[in-house]
Image (cartoon, rainbow, N blue to C red; front, side, top):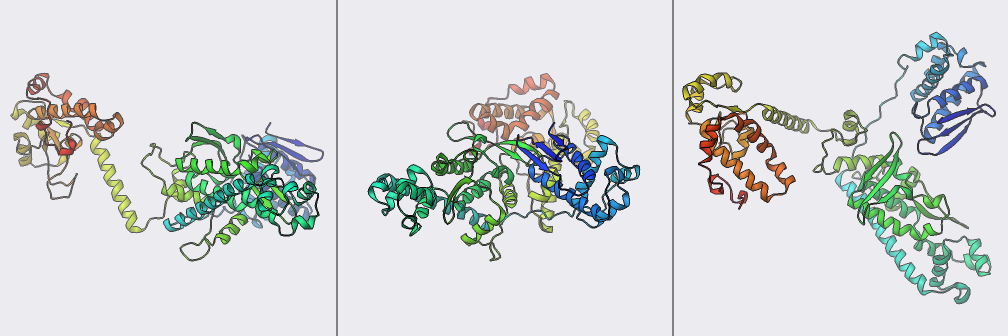
Length: 573
């Protein structure tokens, strides 16, 4: 079981999906009988049966349980969940936040699903809508280009300076000697000691040297030496932010990374496993820029890591955190107040002139907003765990009315293209012009052409290279009112094109051109440029001509570029 309830003392033992554990003591809650029932409900809500799958979520539910128990104790309630009334619950919910109402409702519903202990009126009420819905927060707006560049540049400057300082300190330390022999004063000797013994505390240095505490602490230089050799919280946070900027991984996934989550697939490729709080474990093949950041961090933190004990050593993020008399070396979590102090120290400002509000979720929003879509995989959303609505609210900008009109125009044009490509091509297979003229009005009913235009189409007066065109000035592939500038193969997918037997030689010349291009182009490039036209020509147009027509047309094809109206850059020779 992912969660079990211990009666004495009242405790819920959790085993989360990432294999971490937590024992939650609840014996201090008022109303012991109710507390025991709520504990059972909390155990039933644990993953995979419910949303509880992290310590943070457990603590949120504990707070809701405490608030409900204290409220009921204040009104003299001493029973269990089966004695709760709808009036008491409504009174409690009206006086507390919607999030508290939602969590207590979930606890009681889970308990009742297992035991059926609630009163019918309470059960019926719990199935309804909440009294107050959680207010919907405003989606994060992406950083402007200038803010994004300033944040990225600040991180890069800190990293570059800190890494260069560390390399110089390592070189100096290797040139020094044991301070018990050469003395404590030379900086090289202090660096030598820290390089060989790690970030020692003041007491450990005094014990090693056999000298007085005041002599060692006189100028605090051992702390300065350690800051040169080992990454501080300020430096580690710069790496952490820059990795978010270059990878777009969710903040909780980055904060909880361990060394075991890094899987090298060659010298320049990393498959990174991370835990996303809402959907658990995921993987990402890191972009090249993120690989460089992670590689540099592993190199920068390697010295500190070899002096760090488990379990902190297995954490990705380590930092040297000196205090007045100690030197802590441990895995770190970057809380918001740490980020605020970092921004203030860097004097990093936004476009409004105030200190930039660095929010790690907003970094992910900006990454998704700015990411290159040229390698789009065809998914309808950036993240498969998002609905289209969530992605639109949180990762896309709020367009102005003019931008909205432009987007709608692009969508309408794309939809028109899809309809045109899906339409069956209009091929006149009859060799008799009179018979073709009889059939054509029915076939062209959707194009709304006049009888005069139909006569011109059949008689060849509207021919272009590969087809007869219903309206060269329609503006489907260029400005309206101007002759169509489309290349010969574009006609194959154009809804205005009409293919007659007299066009068979040029269609075969076009097919020969496709074959020559296929031999000289990479397959992926050929399919991207000519693939849809080849499919339409071979599958939908040529098979509808009589074999005798194609055989006669084949005699006119010599398989040369000069048979087609090509531009110099389109030549296949």
